[in-house]
Image (cartoon, rainbow, N blue to C red):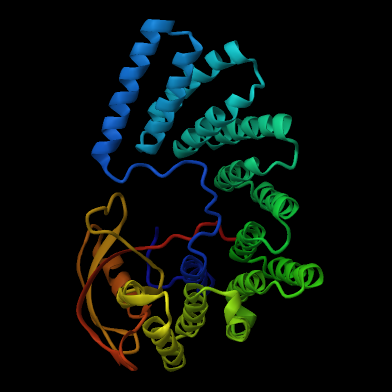
Length: 418
């Protein structure tokens, strides 16, 4: 990434808006196709070793071309993918799938998952055309066995959309997102969490591409449909209003309306407390607090953050764990993503020392270390002055944070500028 000191305004807006999306929608477009990999790397190695041993035993007992051996190869390919070795996963799955087809036929339902994992392996290797083809074949098999409107194909659609984006086929990706909404609406209804998440995925996608009007139309239509068909489905309405607020914040001419939308969502939650868990009400409050912080309106933000802290201390069911999460330093505004110092990887990283004022503004900023040149260090230091963090409270009193250290990298926008 070229990190000079003069990002265009719209580029800076996209980076900040992308950070806001991660705060408001941490799970947006998180349609899991795989089980999460084991947390312990040694456990992963043990699983791989056991699976490889079992494959050798099955090949010895039934033959290398047998169906039991092919099924075990599929399992081994999944493990390699989860262990971060997509090249080995692809090689194994490309051997296993033809053998399964020989025994089961070209269109057997058991081939859905192997083809999906093959597509994800190809995607991880940057072979997006191959990935889209494998994922399409997997999706086609779900159509044959469960009908065109089956729910199982939704994660395949999202995975395929990711490859379409990487190939620059943005219209195709948009159509896939729209199709996911139709499927979720058909299977779960307008007010379901599944449908709302699908709408927010498309809404964020359109907004990030600068297509503000289509995004706002999408939300306006969805909210009207929700009100017409489901009456007072308050939780879903609040989630859609939150998504609409994101669309507003991506729209330079009408950004301030994002605050109005989040205020309206908060009022709806406050007037219907029984419809929401304490955690959800706290989340809506934090959303409203984060938004003015995005616009450097710290005094306004502090009032709402204070409400959030009061909720965390007084609401039954939240407790000490919630207070500890609130006390954790949280970046709210700025073109950076926070890195784990033990996992810097291939990032262009910066180790920054600073202190935080009581309202979340940084001061006494220094770039202590980096793996890049002086010009980029200077850019990082200049931009870090524009970051904002959630404030820390003791009772009703916001507190400064002294002697902070953080590792960050400039955050690339997900989408090409249009």
